[in-house]
Image (cartoon, rainbow, N blue to C red; front, side, top):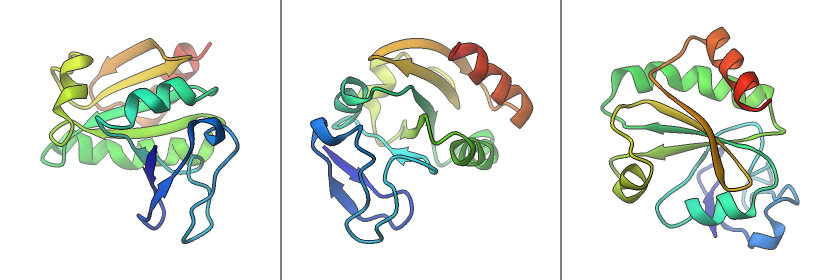
Length: 140
């Protein structure tokens, strides 16, 4: 699957069997899947869910959405605090198939997946403390 580096934006091909081996970016050499949210798309979402042995926290968002933009730093800070989880962002405008598949009706919508299954989801931008509490409950 193709993963854009969250640090430099370079496109990297990551084989599904290497997804859990902490792959690094071919350009900047920083970790691809830890410390910063990665972009998932209609093309790589299902493969990422199937390949990941760690929980995936997804922010379904859109560029025009004020609450989404306001929540983005909270999401990024959480990704930096929890490298043991994969944080991903899905642009709902660019990926309408995922929006339809997961019945995204309002944004931001936050979802947690483990072993390819949806564990929990919530709609709306959450303050940092409430987001951390929700994550802890969802990943219990």
